Length: 221
DNA sequence: GCGACAG
DNA sequence: ATCTTGTCGC
Image 1 (cartoon, rainbow, N blue to C red):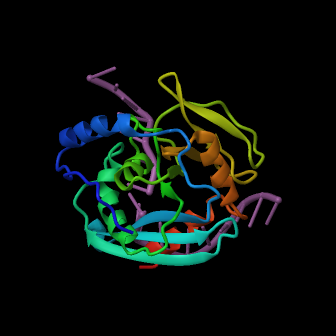
Image 2: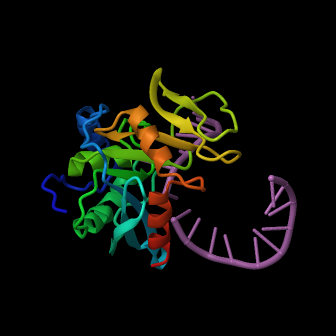
């Protein structure tokens, strides 16, 4: 894949905040994707050498059969620390490198982390989607912001994730009896559509196949 | 001022 | 994220 848009990568949280507040208004939470979906991509990160090296993994699966079509890995020096609310600045640079190597352009990308369910509305999924102008979904294993009512233990049950009076995502049980996932629009994907695709990428585990496979790639070096 | 806090 | 064995439960 080839991208054109980019912006200077900040070295301080103050600069990062300016970028987030500038980009947040450009995020689209309505469906703007090419359907029917033919390819779904998953992105995940891993680190080496005490965290000094970032390793990004991308996997492209056919949809809806979820067969591996292509994978890619990218390494580069880690330049930003992990600070809650600023994850994208630490991980996106390497992710862009891994995506550049992909030949099969996916129709949608599932990211490890929040979409708009973020303090300033720009989690990693939204930030990435905006930079590469592609539909993205935030799939997080834990909560960053927002509150929600308890949900039933049954697979498929869900509850709105509310932050500052707004529904910014959904807490979704992807498997009966296990901890739920936190789903939110990344860019160009509505919440209902996001939930739909996440569930359609679930087989027998808590995590969607996209993130599970990208996870293996990112941690197996 | 005191907690909470994606990966 | 990463360091790590066995163990509890279906």
